[in-house]
Image 1 (cartoon, helix red, strand yellow):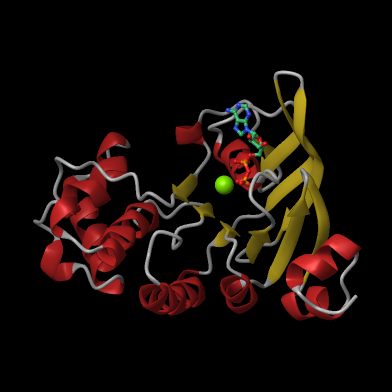
Image 2 (tube, protein in one colour):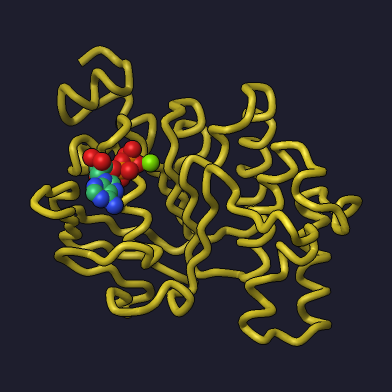
Length: 238
Ligand code: ADP
Ligand code: MG
């Protein structure tokens, strides 16, 4: 069980405001997709939730507990990046289990959790390989495995499929959809792919210049865009 709340969350880099006060309530198990043009602040918003950036104003809380002052490791959050961020010198098994090892999880428990994740992600044959011996899709599955085994309260994805070719992207999208059903982890997922957003989202957030222009079910946003920006971006008639 985990809810995520953002209250008037702001970010300023130097003298530039890049996030102008975002409010968002993510329900337990809800899958929220954030879309918006390059530079609108999607990654910055995710990085603040993860604790990789400080907030300049407002409050982020998980299950009602403020996390603004917590280190990333103490937030019970896992993040999957576009570039996978795997350790090149470590095997798939060690990459997936690294966070658990750091958290001093018992060895048998680690083995059991990695086995479950590897099965879910079809990585069983590759556990002893190094990342360079894997395809792009397999690498992205390892990155997801690493997140899954930690059983985080909140999952963050920053354009996880955008380095994959179109065919693989469709396949991985279906796999993420299946995982989402199976795990039901509260998630924030950033993409610039409209189809990805439409298929994965319980609700979507359309961002524009550091502001959440609209938050709603995909079909609602599509049918009733709140601003002319949303109308143009989603590609429906205003
Ligand atoms: P998106 O992920 O939507 O493409 P970002 O969150 O990466 O957008 O960036 C939002 C804005 O903040 C951009 O104008 C970007 O240049 C700026 N920005 C992001 N990170 C930094 C940083 N560390 N220092 C200064 N400006 C930054
Ligand atoms: Mg980004």
